[in-house]
Length: 329
Image (cartoon, rainbow, N blue to C red; front, top):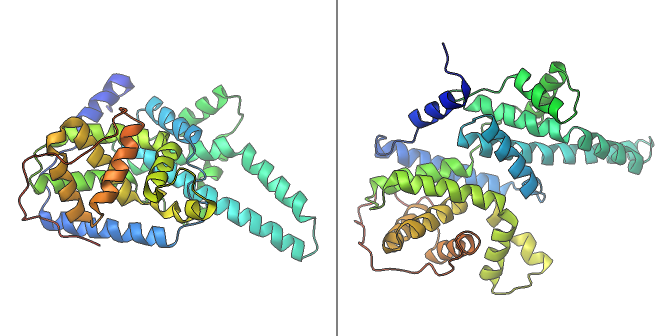
């Protein structure tokens, strides 16, 4: 019989702790190039509204519910990204339909758009929970959230949805995203880059580094606005950015590769500053992201996590120059 209960779920998590150093270098290289390409494509097609549905309250809701349901850590990031992409698509399509109605001399645009917004607000929590449920199905070897569990939770919030409503909600999300919900997340970038660092001779223990990275990645998602606001001000050397600078900074906020590099760099500094310089050099060689950009991101994360704001180059052991994975940019 399948293992059940909180203790059993924690045991399954322990059995699925990441194992580093078992994948062939050529496979890692191909995967890294693929992720880098997908990241660039995503940034090139970025919506002006990107990030609107990654507010702290939404992320916290997803994280807490995933924890309550003992989901794999990757599922929480999948759920946030699925919800973000769906809602942007949904809002854009709803707004465009109101413009079309006005052209056809139907009900006033304002009234139709108001009705659409009200419907989106009414189904907001349902859609959010459906995204978590879909994300759980992408990590099926941990725990799939069934409809009974979802209904019980929604009923605790005084919602009276049915199983049919849940199925229709999932289908609406899948159709809007053309069934492309297995999207890359920063979680995948972090784990892959850690694998590369391990192959390249990083002196920090990979499991400890991985654990710290997961904590900081959670933190960065939960404190997204304040961390990126700090990073923007550092980048432009101005404490009061204008609207144009904020708009141009959007691709930086959505760059998963940059986020992963910043999280790993910061984690290594917290664990052992003596090796920080080595890790930064490796990350620069692997991704092509400049040392200055890595330093600035580490500063922003450190400022809002442990309170330290001075990551600096240290006299650590320098790594071999025979890197497994060449630059991908």
